[in-house]
Length: 338
Image 1 (cartoon, rainbow, N blue to C red):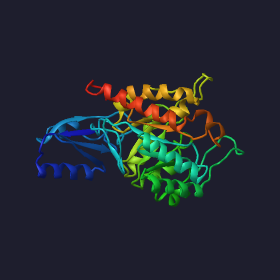
Image 2 (image 1 turned 90 degrees about the vertical axis):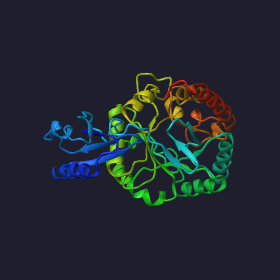
Image 3 (image 1 turned 60 degrees about the vertical axis):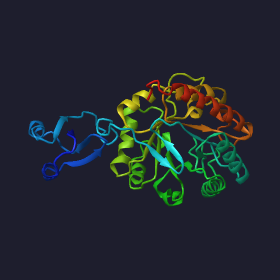
Image 4 (image 1 turned 135 degrees about the horizontal axis):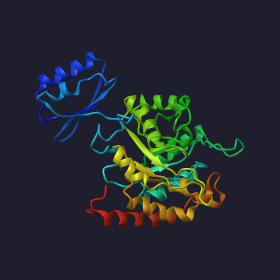
């Protein structure tokens, strides 16, 4: 249930309402906007008398919300969430470019790529230290050494760092990492999501390959319910009957998730297509559809990459793509697109 208050509500009446709700074991999550305050009521609201609340002078409107996700729901939080990491901005009409290799392979590699993508306009560096692989025999990442090298690249370039966390036990290792990524396979690792909810770091959650929008938003809800408001949703393709591409990129997720939720939505065209030749066109399509950002795999030598070389583009290709993306967003300005 949500309660929409009138402008400048009487403090005494508001305190009385909040206490009345608290006495009925209802948690209240307030969202204060420029002209309106919304109270999100969490708990068993089935016995709450809507007419009783509506009759209060300070109340504009009361609505019941059917969706099981509350904190992630745009009805509770009408204004877009904007997440700032260093100089990078995710949400609010910006297009954040997150770029880097699938996995960290050496100091020279990660620092070289970091410098190249920053020069082309990337505002966040991505790179895998711990790698969840389908085969136990595949390269699993440099792990702790990979974290150290990512932080060296951050020191060399000033770029905030995004990398994947796979288990609650790894949290102490990520103390200096700026954005913690939850991969598609871990999207419903609820123990991990609860632990991340107790942090205040931005959490990037990738949609599972068979997950619905509601599944993804419920995963975000675990983090939000824990008290961490800094959640980024990532569409990385879903599994369908098509085999030409690695996955099927669901671009309709951008306007759909933005309608359902206030959280930023970014697109991963690399994992979605699995083919480097398709990454630029899908990135441009995502930018045109209103994505808040892109997370793109960039490698200095894709044919010899230890992980996901076929879907990685070169720094030169990324530079050209970044220029095209800027032109697309500039062309759409003032067009009423979200």
